[in-house]
Image (tube, rainbow, N blue to C red; front, side, top):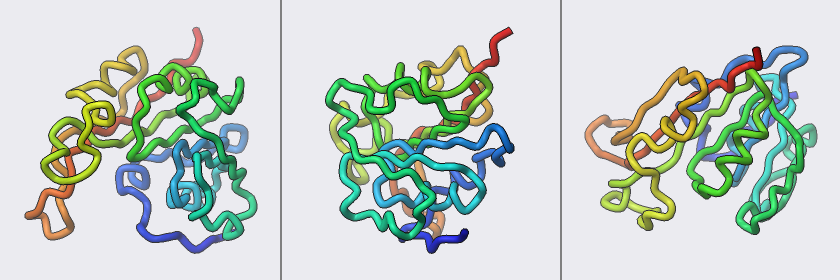
Length: 180
C-alpha cells in the first residue's frame, strides 16, 4: 500500500540511512512523529510502523491505516510503550533527555536508532532556542558510545541553494550490539 506523503518530505538523513526491513525484523517506531512524514515513508518502504506523538490531530492517520498510531505525552515520566521493542527507532526534531534510557531499552539487540535534532548554535537560526532542547556537541555520539556508530554528523544544515544555513543539527545512526 502506498500512501501520499504529507508535506514536508522526510528528512534526507532518514531516507539515506534507514536500513531495509528484514522479514522477521521489520518493526519501526517513529517517536514524536508529528505529521507522520517519516511514518508514512517507513511504511511505504516495508516497515511495520508504530507512530507516537502527544497530538495526532494534525496527522492524516487514515492515509495509512496499517500504521499503529498512538497518542501519548512522552514527557509525563511514564514510558507509554512498556517493554515493546523495535528493530528501528527514528527520532527527528525532538529532544527529551529522560527518554534516552527508554530508547536504549526499546531498540532490539542488533536494531538501529536514527536520531536527528537541533543542537547548540541553532538559536541563531530559529527555534528551538532553549538549551533544554538543544544537544551539546557530540551528545548523541557520547550517549550511545557503547553502540556501533554507523554515521554521525553535526553542524550547519544548508538550504537547497547551498548558501543559507537553515539550522544547526546533530545526527547519528547507531546499531545496538547483539548479545554475545
